[in-house]
Length: 150
Image 1 (cartoon, rainbow, N blue to C red):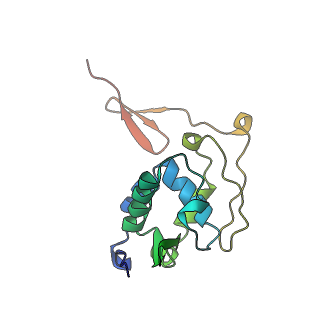
Image 2 (image 1 turned 45 degrees about the horizontal axis):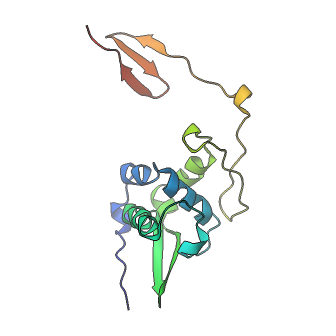
Image 3 (image 1 turned 135 degrees about the vertical axis):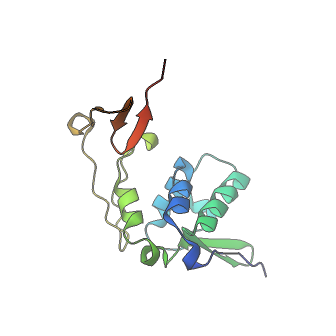
């Protein structure tokens, strides 16, 4: 029988989880898993090959986002049960975001424990204006973008 390695709960950290969730394919995997059920790879409607999907699954597993349970020739995948204990509310917050990177609003799935509100239509979204700050830096939202020096 195959053995799948999962990181200990104590090693799950915000940076690693957010890095794993920073890919549109992995976000679509997590969106499917948000129903809190087990799924097999055929349940994920992604435009990548099987080996690439396996790579994305491994990335999510190594970050502590998903739990894989091999059974015979299949591998069942679900959200890791202790992720919400380690990083409370993180998946709810990430799944409720209306991110332009994915080109769509994630809608409620009816999954237990996760409620994802609909995003605002594009015409009603507030877009933060850059605010000048000292030292040649323009602050935008929560990040910083340096101005080129001459």
